[in-house]
Amino acid sequence: MNRLRFGLSAGLLAILAIGGCTTRKSANPPPPSYPSVPANSVRILERLPSPPYESIGTITVQTDADMNRGKTISEIRQRAGNSGANVIVVVSEKVFSWRNSAIHQRLQTRRIVARAIRVP
Image 1 (cartoon, one colour):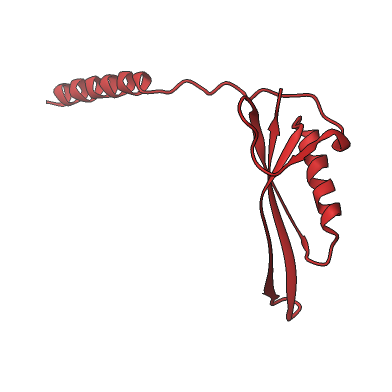
Image 2 (cartoon, rainbow, N blue to C red):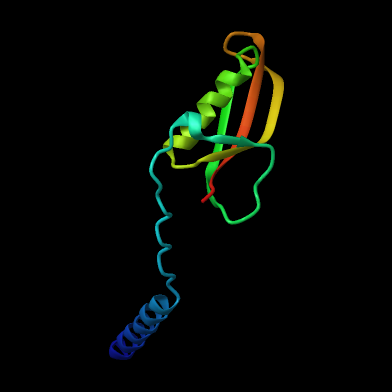
């Protein structure tokens, strides 16, 4: 009786092991990497350009609302250029207030979200 149980268990394990191998997905290829672009060469567009372009990623910067917007955009251009993007598109900009419970004050914050892309 014990021998039969072992045989069934070993057979079941073999089926599970084989089944597991056939459903495995291959690894995604690494994303392309691009050389850095100087921040002053990163263009700012109002909307996404016509294809072709490569989406590098999304950059979100959150600062004090009183901070100069131009300085924040410069930081975004620097980050985009470091990642190899040559264009940014600001997709959202929002100023909001929130209560910081640690210091018991209401603060104004600006959040800018931009897409970093590479246009050939």
